[in-house]
Length: 198
Image 1 (cartoon, helix red, strand yellow):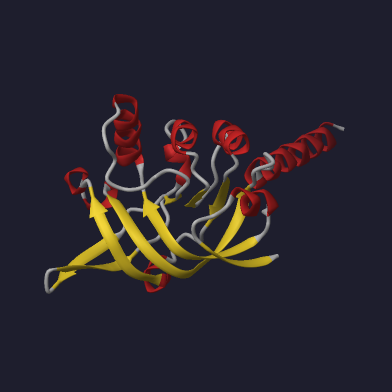
Image 2 (cartoon, helix red, strand yellow):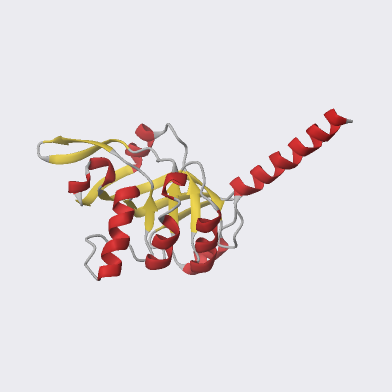
């Protein structure tokens, strides 16, 4: 099913999404990767203010390529980062901030799937290698924070328009497209191996 939606995302909307749905977003998304995830968790534990609204937000695993023109940041490319590298931090991030949607590539693991189910969130896959196309869907840089972490690791708040296609790969019911495919592959491999033995 093809769905167009504006942020913020309600729990009712998230609950209606299923694996395989095609989503196009208009609104605000926040880029976050390893170092920013780690800092956000640390700040939350210590009660320190976080300079971007992560609560019930949409986070994008992305290290954008940007350049300054006349003193203003411009996005050159904003393709997704491989999400599994954030697997050790993302479940805690979801629990602390009730993240509604994660966007990335390559899928995420069992612990993230559990956290999304428990806190009503989804993971959406965006096409790798489409960084320039993604940049065209970013209509405005709302702000950037934590530049001391480096440009790719900073918190970039983007205003996007019809950002997609985003394919729901983990839904709030605990279905994980990547894990289902892995299971099918393993089952097929077992069949092939047994046929060779016979």
